[in-house]
Length: 298
Image 1 (cartoon, rainbow, N blue to C red):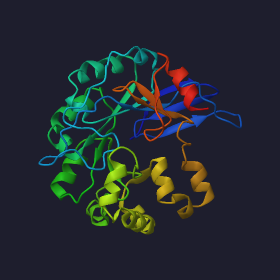
Image 2: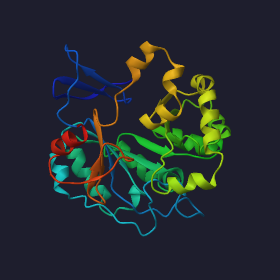
Image 3: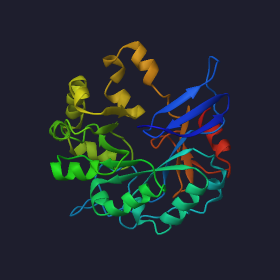
Image 4: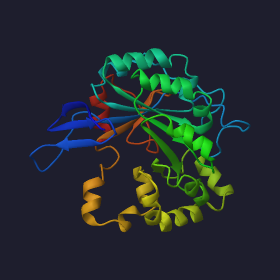
């Protein structure tokens, strides 16, 4: 049963946060104008040893690697975060940051909602720790990056932790990989393929990426009944032409806004920020999140 986990005023509207990830925006005006970002995609580690038995992922748009740098998790920008702001913590492998737990504890005290994205192999090596962090309220949602066919035992381990979403990348995950996830009550987030970082070169060597994106577009409506929920980042919405597949009312009800409307990206490792992780990055020039947000909204 879902419940309200937080409510706050942001500019001219009220936000209500639900335990299952549902977000409701409310006012009696014809516009929603925020003063600060509702959610922030925040990179805190560029260190990543890659999946077991392999080097770093060839399509990683952040170009993370085993000797990557780590963010300053005492950066004064973090003091300006508002209660119930959602942080999508990523990297790199966030678990390799030695200051992760003190940071999560500090954010919990500020009522900042931390979500975490992990590669499947990193999750499987730390699932007990992840479960502890969630049960104690240090993190809320967990995104697990899956881009290959996985077996039922692995699926069951993913499902054992509440508020878990399987993340896939359009063009990387094969259709058989999606079908292996069918009818497991899974929430799925499809991310667009990023022609950024190592992704620019990887696509030159994998000639089937565009074919897989086309196959995924053709299969989306058939996939819908097999998942608890399917959602998309804005890049995937564009690449998969999702708007063509749904009626106008559904699109207007479900679309959460363009990049930068209610969100922003902060690379705390390089101390830069942007509208999204594939936008041109700007050096952090203020310790107030409102100032950064106003620059990306222009």
